[in-house]
Length: 402
Image (cartoon, rainbow, N blue to C red):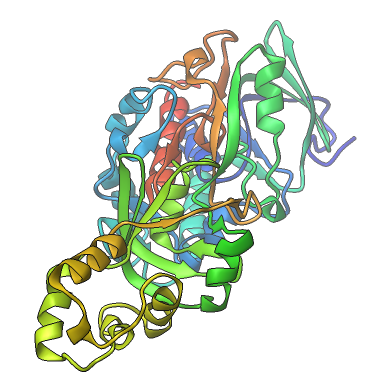
């Protein structure tokens, strides 16, 4: 008899959750508090791997400014119900209950002062208090519908459950154990899965564009604007050996697709045209590249002058010339060729079509007792704690009824 069953024949439970990440563990806690018998299984050798690596090891566990507008989905209204019923304040209360010190970094982003391990410990302690059983290194091999619910063959034997919750995440960061299992399971039960792609991910350059900027790797702009169409973000930007990264690039990557026109505002807090005119009056003998180095990183200023602007003493430029240079720097075109892909993507865009799910319970409209929560669903948050809040909210919504 397998270890999971402990020699007592087939294992029966009320709720079986596949995936011991943020959404799965929150769902388990919520369901178990209702008196449900809950088993969580995960093929990885430890729980919460993405939690542990998030936020540079300090876990950006929520964002106090969370609203449905911070999410991408084919149905922009789908996330409203769950987000309204489990808010950032609810999770903060849980963090404070466990005595975890935290701080706001910027724009409502909350991080642990110490370590993301504290969030995993919080979740496991809450699971233990509620009587949740968590089994790692226990993958799922087959799922079938039964008269009583579901029969799930795991690496350690068969489990029978009334409710089955799929919290398997997406394809991002395969080194952490990410797989497409949740999508396969959704299709097995008749659900549509919308096209998926890497999101919150660095962009790559190729050809001449890569040649122009590759040796600027490591050059950072503390604040830059990125724009695709009408969608724009202001945050840090970093040049890499392969392209562009930093928060503003990760944000825009969720909206950018190959062929899209990408524009950078290299100094969004400075009116560069007027500033350059003023600098000409103050420093007429200074070369343009040296003046721009006061507004931009020196290496970047020099490269832009090499590529586009002939660097001459400032006195040789007319007002109109300087204002045009400023205009270009606020709307700098750059052609990205692709992304770094799932290897470094923080999340997966797309997933299980929300048309097949209840927005209030996350339950399948096709198969009673089947639930999909977290990243596997076609709801993707911005950078900054929003995806964790979706995990907590969607997990809580399913846990209240599963």
